Each structure stands twice: as structure tokens, then as C-alpha cells.
Image (cartoon, rainbow, N blue to C red; front, side, top):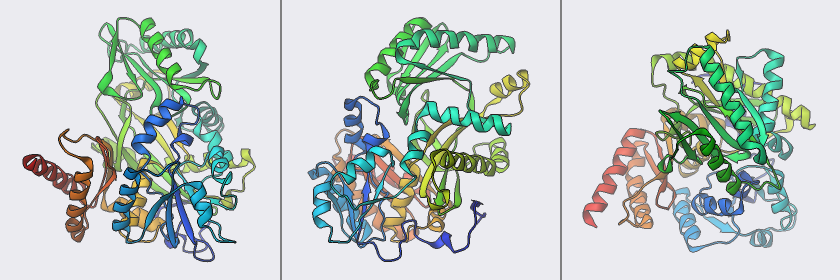
Length: 496
């Protein structure tokens, strides 16, 4: 195994120490999948829609606690059924509880450890309003507040890139507000077109831009616009199934403004980041684990994207598709980690946080330029540059899935075990469509039976969201796991 340590001292065997370790056994460990924190400046209707799909996904639970809980606003039959399924896999009860029920369960002197998906300031306020003695795990809320915001993150990236002359930087971008969006985007479009014309690339590089609300997340609260022939295509929230076509840029920009207005809570955050749509070779992510001053890289992960969409629909162990990408990974993976660690330390210093006291996870997504973008960089007399997409100072689809596999394998939640899951292979899919005639709950039952057989060979199939489309985790021999799942679905259709 390649050494994962890329920053900080390592005076004890932290690689084999639980991420949630304390001096004595924790009585209650709680996962908190706070979708409202991920989209804290979005329209409440958007939050409710996503909570309905992702609310029962919660692999970020401190599994080494004596009692395991998942914090929810209102327990439902569907959530309880999912918790019962996971309890069978974990070998111990995992129970959905409200804040009030959690507080009633705590004995005097007990401090439940709550692990939110994203430790925004609002998460602590929500938990502590009822469970005053709860301890929250993750990056400090002050750091999350800065890194999560797209506008603040790009400004921070500019500071670091300019100071170090680093070749990992934000793409061309501007920051505007919702009311000024059409005019600002129109001017930015002129900049893009002039840029391509000066490089002689107009015929080869279609103009495009990404509009993201500063507090957007996972492409929810974003619009991608790009030219195709004489038309302009608009992709809302990364959903390529509902691409809309417009005859010109002005009508497309007005439609994008209306889309963002419906998604945003402008009283909380009105800024929009407009960035140039870059032609990519690939767009990996990289997660790091921070542990009392030391930092371990989980290395690049692969982001699965739908055709015509920039939204990440799943994540996996990174497997370079070409020799060029393999070389790029070997040359740039450690550099990505070092840049990210420098950024995290810089952010901690700005926020007055003691870096040596932090335990948490964070992720950064980068963009590797394709051939046309490399030609543009040469024309601009730039060195080969990789671009920053966004920072996720939280758990991700990927790390949440890794922790789920650790839990159902009944292993300790350590960095070494996380890296082992990655090396053995993992792929998580957020939305895998099921045939309409199949009941997702029935599919889950059969997945449980199939997983019980396959785990003897080190292969796992886990249902993380019992919906249609279904959320799934494949681990071990991923192609074999996916094949087995497809065969299961075909058999269920035949029997239906």
C-alpha cells in the first residue's frame, strides 16, 4: 500500500485508530444526515425534495459506540424499515430517533457523539437546542462555513494560487448576484468568445458556462449552458434528462435566472459564481482525513457523470481510462493532496482554529484539462493547469459509502480500513432506475439475500436508499457485483 500520510506528524498508530476514538467507550453514537445543512441557502421546497430521496442514507455513524442512532426530524415506517435492514447487516441495532428521544435516552454525564454529514453552524444549533451535551464530529463549523460557499472558496483559492504560483487554481470566473445575472453572464460570454477567437479555437471549442448559486451543492442550484450548433442548451441541477434548448444566449440566460431564482433563498445568499465551462479529460475528487494535526489522503476517486450532464451521479475507486490519465494521476495526485492540506491549514488559521485539534473529513473536486483546453492554455502561455471545481468540507457520497461498507463488514472505522475498502474496489450509485413493476422494498429483501451469499467471496451489494431510482453500493469485485445485481433484477422481472 502506498503511504497515505501527506502532512503532519504521526507519533502514534493513527492509521489503526478509530476516527471517533475517545478515552473510554462512547455510550451513544449518532449519524445525522442533515440535507438542510448541505443546501442551507436553498428554497425549502428543494431541500424537502432531496431529503425525501437522500434522508435515509446515513453511513457516517460512529459504529464503535455501544448504541447506534440516526437523528431524524420524524421517524417514518420507510426509515424504520431501512434501519432494520441495516441493523441486520451491522449485527447491532441502528435506530432512528428525534432530538427529544435522543435526549431522553442519555444518562447523566453521557455525551452522545453526533456525526453530521456537514458540520455547518446550523447543525450544532439544531442539535444543541435539545441535546445540550452532544459533541459534534467533523471539521469546525467556522471552516465549513467558508469552504462550502462557492464564492468564498474561489476567493480563498485565488489567494493561495497567487501566493504560491501554483498550477492548481480556479477556472476563469466572475461573481455576481441574481438580479444582475443576465447582464453579467452576457459580458462573461463575450470574454469567453474573445478568448477562443484569439487562440484560433472558435470552431473547435463551443462556448459554455456554469452558473452556481454560492451555496449550491452537488449541482443542485446550478445551471450549465453551452452552445451546440446555432442553439444554446440548458441543463438545470445537473439533470441531463430535462435538457432545454434555446435559440440564443439571451433567452437561455433569462431561463437560467428564473431557474436559480426558484432554487435559491436570496435573503440568505444572493451571490452566483459564473465559471467558464472547461473541456475536460476527467474530473476526479480527493478526500482527506484530518486527525489531530496529521492528514491522510484517500487519493483520487472517480466521479461518474451522465452524458451531457456535469452532475456527479456516483463515485468509485479511481481507475484511469487512458495512459494519459494514468500518468496524470501519478504526477498530480500527491500534489492535489498537498495543495488541499495547505488550503485547510490556511483556512484554519484565518478562522482562529487550532489545526492540531481537528478531526474530520473533507473533499476537493478538480478538473483535468482535455486536449482543446490544453491548446488554449498554451495559447495563453500558461503552464499545464488543473482547475478547482469545488470543496466539500464534509462527508461525500464516496466516504459515506466507504464507512457503510466498513460498518456492514463489522470492522473498526479506521483510516487503514477505509483505504482497504478503496483498494478492494467500491462504487456507489445514487440513482439506479428500477423497472416500474418492482417494489423497491422487495428488491431490498432480495439484495440482502444475494449479499449474504456474495460476501463469502468478499463482494458486497448494499441498498442505501430504498427508492426508485435506488441508491446502491457495490464493493469488492465491482463489475461482478453489478452483474449479479442486474441478473437479480432480470430474474425479478421474469417472476413478476
